[in-house]
Image (cartoon, rainbow, N blue to C red; front, side, top):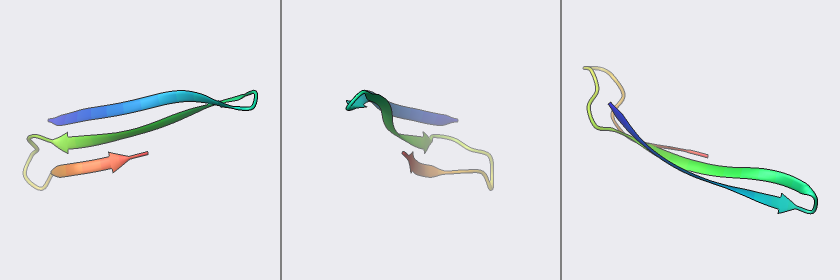
Length: 42
């Protein structure tokens, strides 16, 4: 069972809108040989 956390922000560079985001996932429980621990993404 993953627990996810994500933040995002919409910013403008001149007239161009850009979405920035980052997050993390922690596997609270997983099947044997499954994913475990922390993982981050951008």
